[in-house]
Image 1 (cartoon, rainbow, N blue to C red):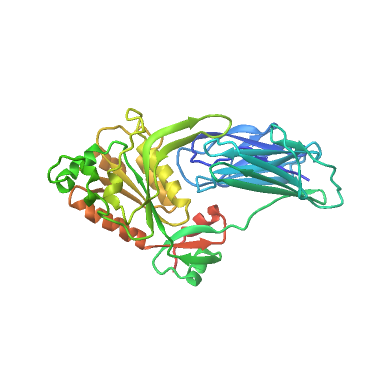
Image 2 (cartoon, rainbow, N blue to C red; image 1 turned 45 degrees about the vertical axis):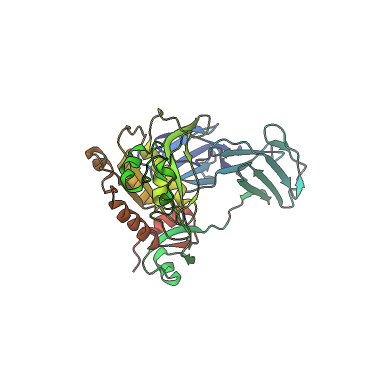
Length: 419
């Protein structure tokens, strides 16, 4: 009758030194922390400590194993890091001999729940200010289900439940389907053999593109001035109707713009979250890619540090979490130093590990930019047409396979070649 739950939920991108906290039932005396099946720490009560995830930004499997006083494993908990996850998560913690329950939660940008419910065997129990409640007497001879539901104004909903039966805990585990990008002959029956697990469906879903660009588009505007400026040049050329629809992507494709200026940095007992201003989504067919790359964001602090590489990593997560065909476009321009925590090579490898193609565009890229990002497409007129064509071809080559396993196993299976 042992319970072990994470109180730290890693919903964003994390690497390096991180604090992790867990709650355990009284019989758990030590907790071993494993990262990618390698032991990195041993925690004693109150089961809070620091672990090192390394400098590499990559999907990680975080496992906590609880042991009793004799060294027997009595409980286990896990979560997958640096993969698309819902914007909020929660856990139910039981204490005082199952006489009290508390809901521990986290939302990606620390939004508080607008509505919180706790039910015991379909009976609603009032919660106190700490999101806890005293439970009614529970008959040990019968199974009991304790359910929690949290709703957020942003639309996120989290549901968790714990079943107590025969003196043992059982946390609910939903059947998972994970979307994985595949190319080539995407037949469901053939792919099941490649992944080693059942492939539920293969589809040509909608496509999403996340464009990372500086909030000041002046260098880009100047590059296309001669081609798109109104003949009399007496009006703002960005209002020229010729911009709308120029260089479109296929129908059923949307794009979102992410500006590499950090808008919010919150620190507490949970991992730090970096939040970047974003737009859209926009219709990438009717508006076109030229319209997207010349957008200005006047609400962003133009003097703020630019974090291009970090923003690309976040863009990769944004693109992957929608479960569609996807790509990230980074538009480089001179004038600002990249003050990211991660370098370009690390971020490129991360996007590859989660199956998100990266297209890097620039107008007359500098030597430093090419050394950092490698394959950079010059989009000076008329080369932008070819870059957009390559982006469209990339999206068209993709299909989405829904694999009957969790994100960690799906990513590991996806590394195997398909015969």
